[in-house]
Length: 134
Image (cartoon, rainbow, N blue to C red; front, side, top):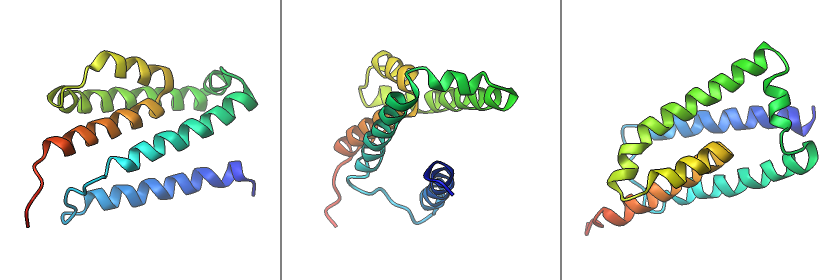
């Protein structure tokens, strides 16, 4: 197996672990949690730059227009971004974030921008949440 065929399985396992952790009823707010999406954004940006330099700036479009599965994946990504935008926008506004620059970043970079926005939102919400003096 090649790295390109193994990484999707690793990413899927990572998503499953993440989903289970955040779904846990005992999962409280963790200070500094914004570092996780920030780190993922940096990692994914690096990975994407490798893809751009290796496959070209619009290599993704070839994949999404190749066949019905490529179309389906493109539609799925667009729906996921739309749902995520709908869900994050009220919290982002409440934290004082200006939506338009983030929307431009997300539409330009996909989940790289979404991860960065999520990190910024978590950071701002952490700053707005009073520290417990337990």
